[in-house]
Length: 141
Image (cartoon, rainbow, N blue to C red; front, side, top):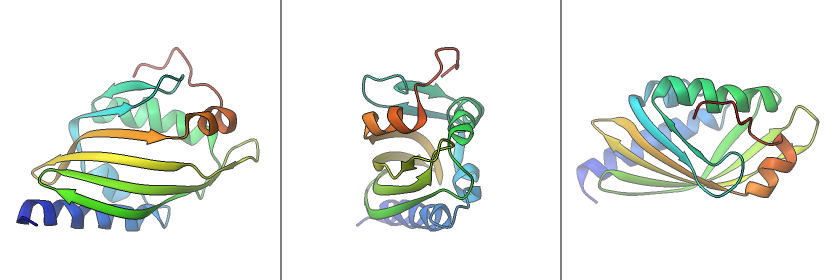
């Protein structure tokens, strides 16, 4: 493995160690200001978020309104090659309506100079909408 891939893998391991404890500080610090996040699929949450401010406000802000505090995301495996890191992860959360939201995720990150510049999320879209509801059409994304 090359040095860049090893550094990127180590950063993602540290980020997900925090997320497993419910601490997202390193994740937020590691987002580039111009990060692009794509929620894949063809359901109401599928859209592209441009910029750190939009991602935190429009996607994660709405998400936090739909889940109870104390949720975690736990990495199952992390694979890195060059500037790309793929993380297989599982959520451990409860929606505000009391439904379990333990989604399976494949998250693909592209990093540059120690910052996350691009993200793609693949998950169980049916579970997302049944547990968290439809994403509001008015959110910017």
